[in-house]
Structure formats: C-alpha cells, structure tokens
Image (cartoon, rainbow, N blue to C red):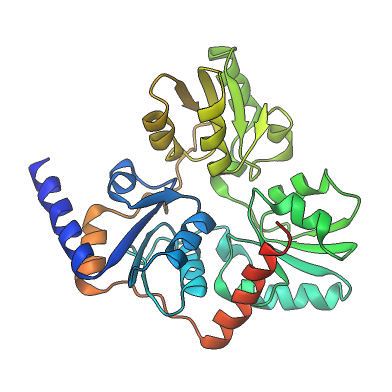
Length: 304
C-alpha cells in the first residue's frame, strides 16, 4: 500500500509537469479509475480530452480509444500506457474489408461502431456509439446500411428499422457475446427483485430479457436515477467500481462467468508512470487517416 501511494504521488507530479490529463474507461481496474481525472466511455472521454487545455492525454483503455482521442485532438500528445491493450472486436474488421463490402453493396452507406481502428473509421461514412446507433440508422439517408464490426449491436439495431442492415458477421465482443440466457436466469433466481441492465453488444436473446438496454454511461446514469435497490448488470465488471462508489446504498451483480475484458485490465499504475516518464506508447496516425476518420466522427454529430 505504501509503495502504491508513492507511485501515485509520482504520477501526479509527472502529470502536473507535463500538463497531462488521465482518462480511464469504465472497464478499467478500480485503482486506475480512482486516479483518473475523468472516467467514462470511449467517445465521452475523447470529447473531454479535446475540450481540455492539457498538452498530453494519457488514455487508459484500449488502442482504438486512444486513436479516437488523437483523431479529435491531433495537435496533442496521446499516450496509451499499455502497448498490448487492444480491443479484439476492433481487430475483426479492417479497411480492406470495408472497401470490399462497398464493392458488394455500392448503394449502401457504411456505419462503423466507435470500437474500430482509425483506418476503418477513415473508410466509413459515419461513426456511432452503442447509445446513438439506432438514432443514426433511422436518420441516415440510405435504405441499405453496412454496419461494422459488431454483429450483436447490428442485430439489435435491425429490430428498430425496416432498412436493410448488412451485418459483418465476424465481429463481436467476446465478453458480451458469452453472456447467455442461462446466466441471466441464474442471476434472476438469486435476485428476483433486481432490474436487469443489458449492454447492446450482447446477443439478441439476452437483450430481449432486459429491463433496460443501455451503454455503459447509460447504465451509470440510469442507476443513479432509479428507485430500485438491486441491479443485475450484463456487461464488463469494471463498471461496478463507479456504480458502487456513486450509489453506496444500492447493490450490483454482474451477470455471467466471463465478465472481464483481459485487455481492459492490462493497464497498471506502473504503466501510467512509465507512459508519463518515458512518453510511451505514443499514438501516431497518418495525416490522411486523421482527416478522413475525423470526417466520420464529426458526421455522427449531425445525426444526434
């Protein structure tokens, strides 16, 4: 504990020296969220980073999140503390895949989930989040939509529209995809009075059991306002840190046995220290990729 306190003091000192800001995704380890200037979802944090006067952004998450921060703040230094922290779902589609899909469906518009690489964003018409995907699909001027990479989020969106959604079937989040109806039933048998909050990256059969289908930020906001005292949460277990901290009078239980993203848990306090001390790992993107991906991200704002 004494060593950790000393390490945190060193981090704060370096942060001040470098005019840096530390951002932590809702799925990060509790000790990472505890020292962050802001905790939230990936796009929310990138927007915050763009609005701050910080010269350096330390993004505690996975690589696509740090890339998004760089796209929105190209003039700033963006550091990903743990080099190997990558989103498996984001790696399941690439720019070449998107170009091939466009050739197969020339009339379709491409919507990419924010959980994609900068190169995929650069090939897409508009980006979306789990919170605004349905809204964008309804508003976009196209009857055919290519949606990458999350097949589960795409299937969920399809239930809200008559437009044809071309689903990239290879993409999914392994944490959410492994949550089953049996997992939900086990949770409900234990806590029959609890409300079930499900992330839209889950399979459709699990989503249909939900009391509320929400993004991570949506879940955090919902439990604050709800009069309920118990919640079953179908998403990655890192979210419990904020839920418990901000709602000490309420109880939470994560649904399922595979409820940790190993990549989200890779970042340590030591990594943050080295990121600030040694300027590692610096996010570098090509100018043309930043420009095209920025267009994709900004296009999203015209629909929400």
